[in-house]
Amino acid sequence: MNFKGALPALILETVRVEPNHGYRIAQLIKERSGGLLDFKEGTLYPALHKLENGGLVESYEGAETGRTRRYYRITKAGRGALARDRDEWRELSRAVTMILGET
Image (cartoon, rainbow, N blue to C red):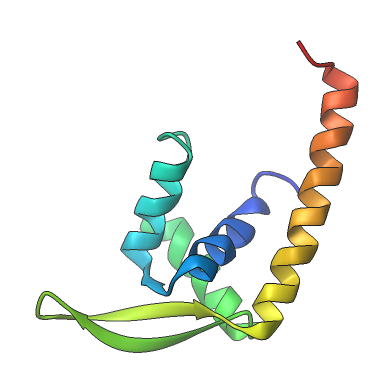
């Protein structure tokens, strides 16, 4: 998994905690990364649609402050994919740390 490939895992982790709409998912990723990861709509929504088409998330309509929004929640298949992504990320992180060294 490379950094670009990390977005689906970040989305899955965010909706694992609780279903949410796209804008809030992006906000949560940004907040949890200390502002380092700031995905714009042009990146986030295609990733959400790909996850939905792959059966890893499902969407439904809900209302928030009088606005209809599309919410996303993780599926059982999405939980399995997230577990695999976590393992892959740990392996990649370990390999990079071995090469760059810990300071």
